[in-house]
Image (tube, rainbow, N blue to C red; front, top):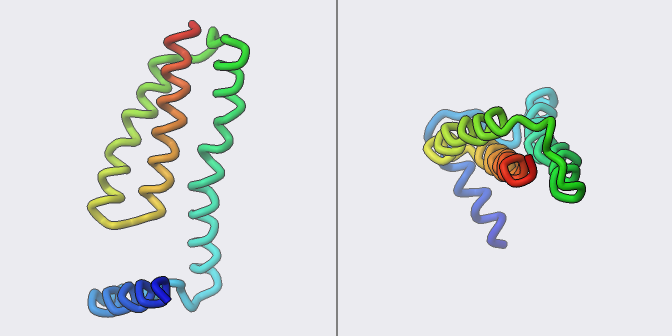
Amino acid sequence: MKGGVLHHINRRKRASKALDPYPSPHPWIRFLDITAIAAGIIGPIMTIPQIWEIYYFHSAGSVSVFSWTAFATLDIPFIIYGFVHKNTVIKITYIGWIMVNTTVAIGAVIYQ
């Protein structure tokens, strides 16, 4: 019941702001929404082998601390953007990215 109420409130907010309905009635846009959510989850997961390599084998010789720290730092504006614009996909994606980028950067500092 709670999800239905929240969905209804979200629909009312979107209608009052003249935004496109969500989920979109257009199959292509609906597919794009689902793809963006999947990419936001799968992307950070694909970094797990790098994290495994660093922490399991204690090897970060070929990992650039500067690059991974820069990646983590550049995630911050996107996280803020997601909160300001109340965009859950951007928030979830970049919170995931900052977590894995920071984990790699810390591992590179420790094991280099």
